Image (cartoon, rainbow, N blue to C red; front, top):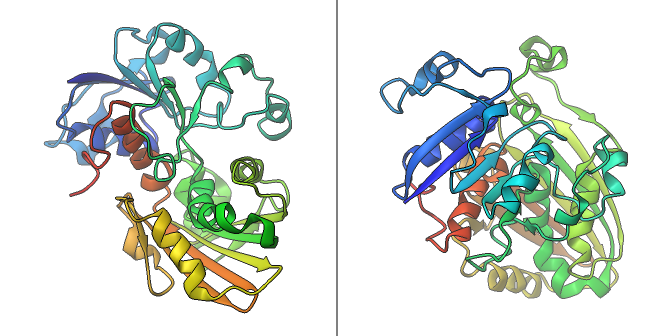
Length: 335
């Protein structure tokens, strides 16, 4: 049995971490921390928890206990790096759901995240926690960088193809759509119902910080082609739908490509290969990633769907925790 600390526990991601960890039969203690909401009680922040979880007082992150076994950070970018180095030095396990440790190159942080990284030595020590690709349990690294939601959807769709056919890929275009909860719980005028209802729009075109994360991981599998990534907002609260178009430099039979995906995910508990393009409603409120692969001459189209708050955040983080301790990775994640 272990004890867990949730830092930044009062946002959407924190809410789902609490839900998953509360029903985890190997977690005996959960301490919740926050900055702005410190001193409040969970029922005040999440009334739906009444009668389900204990009405814990939210503790001040500035007084973080160092006596717990594993720590989940769900803080704004640039904040978790203030706490993590000391915990790692104390041999604690840390899963960061923000972007502070996802990139390998410290020089990219001022460009994409707007801060100078204060602990660059940890960037090479961390495990990039794309849980359904990195299947080994009991990771040697105590620091897990939980992938971004867009990269999770995109990389699960692309890595099998890239790892097998990287020499034959001409260029890749990724178009992803997200529900508005991906922007967090803080009120923003552009995300009001009256602004988003019946509306779809692209944002951060050619400057989205998840593009270098996607490219970084694909290069580890031999990727050397051009990649375009464009994110959009959908008028729904949650879910990510990704369409990847890959132009190959030669023709492959669809069966040949599908066999690569089937082999890659044959043992995966949470990637489901579909015979038709997936729908968001199939994956919302689950830790599944549903993928469909289609090929016609030299064009491959891969569609994937995930829940941005679960597979793209809290669910994958708990899956990574299970793997860190060598447990069944489905614990608390399958009903």
